Length: 284
Image (cartoon, one colour):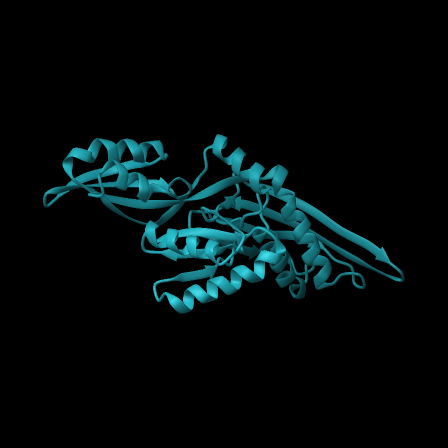
């Protein structure tokens, strides 16, 4: 499947684009469109470049002003080092105030571990009724990211201590303190950007093996191996998703349409710093 993101050029084009997409869906059973829940982009999905081009031409014919391009990559963020944060939230508004103190230890977790929360704090320091609020604050803050606005994954947070006030403490105060503590990781936790890595398999005639491998290498791909399958060769590689948009056109071009490929998500890897700097500049 091939995907392309479309967006209206102006506010006036927004409703026209929605109507045009609904019309295409009614007329063409192969037409697929959806809104990416993370990026908010409207995505068109088709089985060929030709199908996508036909749909884009139809939008133009219907008088819709729109832009199109590659869908946004679902980057992620993670921590580069363990760190302890001691954060106090204190505010006085009228006769009553807000107060909470949290001491948290953050540390990188194994790939695929997601967000792990643990509480080792004494109940005399942080009563149990406030612990869920700390977790909620950390979850909310991690979803907003630290360096580029992408969710932070694969880390552990341990609530090791804190303090409360009999009158001024509340779940709100502890959640706010936890959010503020998490934001300190931008400077203290050595956060780094992660990118989705796809497992790509290319089936190609022998004579195009060199072109296939060279093109995958140019896309920051890591060749995992080759094998013979019938009269063709199969090249397996791990390639960043960000570098796979438009690949089908290149592959068809240098193989005269005789090579084909499949790809699926495999894992997340740290983004090289030079690339990460560009991504952060774009999305931060």
